Image: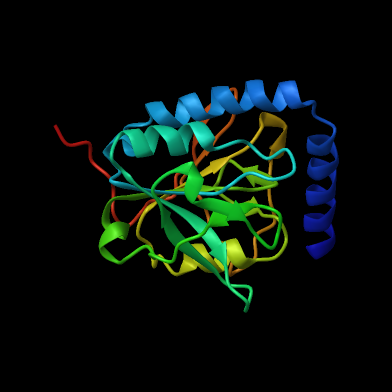
Length: 201
């Protein structure tokens, strides 16, 4: 299984690295537009969003829209023990270079249990399938961070369409996403969240 996972990750990373900046920008815009139209996003009061590195789908339009819409915005921050915490940002100016190359919050106001009640988590990944399985960057810390939400929140994976494959071999500790969004489609992975976000009027 590990050999298969490694092969899938390597192939997807090679193809992603070869993308031009213009292609990444164009596809990222399409993907983020789809996110911003999701009823679950519109209903969320808090949004946790990663900061893109190495040709990942960009997330800055989502962050900007969430901040403008008075949603609470959180980004991952790596601690010394290789654990990720989600820390609040009030603007892009709150982000500083982090130890793994991605920007991360300069502050220390952590996401609280109350913030998880109406939360959407935007999840990076290298490979996904349509059942919500994912292969991440390889360190495992995003899976550990998602596990600590204890079933709360809607997890949305962002990927270019070529990163969606027929099947990702899953480990017991892997955390599934509820949706995968590409430049071509929104995939409902059929993973039942314990708590649905319902748009309020």
